[in-house]
Amino acid sequence: MMEHIPEWVLSDDGRRITRHFPFKDFKSALAFANQIGELAESEWHHPDLIVAWGRVEALLTTHSVKGLTENDFIMAAKIDLLEK
Image (cartoon, rainbow, N blue to C red; front, side, top):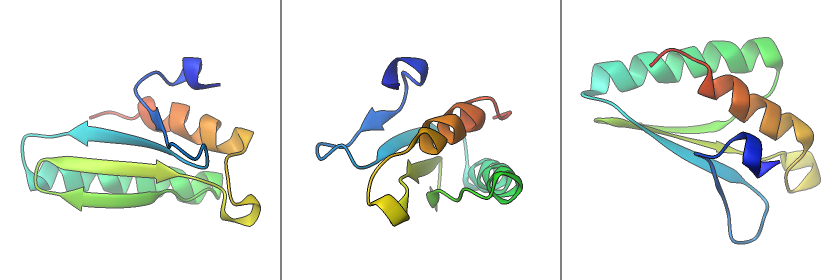
C-alpha cells in the first residue's frame, strides 16, 4: 500500500511508517500537529508525533498487532490531506 502514500517511509523492520513535514516555524508545526490530533480523535487511531521547531514527524503503527494494518495506511492518507 506504500504506493498510495509515496512521501511516507516504511521502517526497515516493516512495522511502522513515518513522514516528516517541514514548517517555517514552531507555531505552524504545532498547529499542524493539533490538526493531526483532531483527526486522530475522530478516527480513533493515534499516531506518535514529534513536534519541533520547523517540523512535525508522524509515526504510524498498530501496537496491538505490533505492526501495520490497513488503518495505518488510511490514517496516513488522511493526514496527507490536511492543510499545512
